[in-house]
Image (cartoon, rainbow, N blue to C red; front, side, top):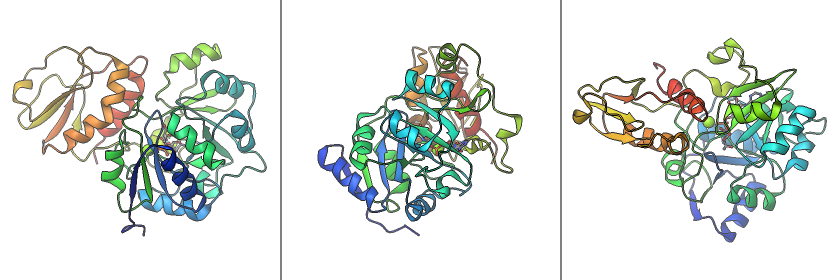
Length: 329
Ligand code: TXA
Ligand code: MG
């Protein structure tokens, strides 16, 4: 077990980037910011490093990882792009979009990272720190969100530290991330399919494709078997406190996760109140979501009750994460 490692935390300067690249090359585990959430990186070609990564996260090993690369050319070395995939990559990379594509014959990503699937998830992140680390390392880096498995994703270095200190080698602190929810995952199958709503709204993708995305198959949502995108495990993005959605009122000993300017009856008596975006801005709400869930989770409330969030644009990803947080465990 990795527990007991000394985890170094460095501000994201040139020395930290060089150190991160060296650490990855030596099989180490490095947390770094992407524009969506902090990722926990390992050398995608090093099965021993990937095994340590699964262990550090406490992640079920059937859950495949996203390979992060510096540019489209590097992505094309590990995945086969058809016309649709190329169109999406050119429109949205670097950015919060992950494509699931067939592996190339000489794909460098270890089988352990793709859970034995013949597809690979790939993305070119936009965050300057992620980009400089990828450039310095010069190979694909697998990086799940840098949280303990089942916990909410980290949007700051402090979140990573609270979950993974003592389990990983290095945290590169690049401040709070701008998007706040994970990348949108599109499977480029016969019909392009939305596998996970995320930081790139569906309508922007559909506009480029000129047609609607297929939805994930019904059974992608349950815990059994080999899911298409196992991030769709029913309970995944979960605080420890119970979560109640679409709150019309707040009861005794409940904390309130608010959205927009409206007041909820009983709010005066809430254990704590945090508002995702008082002015009702979905991008601001996405950026605040995981941090506020973490904070409210520490307040000893009986439940976290959540006001309704509109389901358009980034609201689709926000509501997806909230539904998963609210699954009874
Ligand atoms: O924004 C993000 O995507 C962040 C940052 C760090 O890049 N990463 C992230 O990784 O959210 P993770 O491991 O927490 O979620 C990856 C998702 C999982 O749902 C996984 O099952 C799915 O991608 N996935 C990976 N490879 C796949 C494949 N070949 N087919 C279908 N789903 C796949
Ligand atoms: Mg995750």
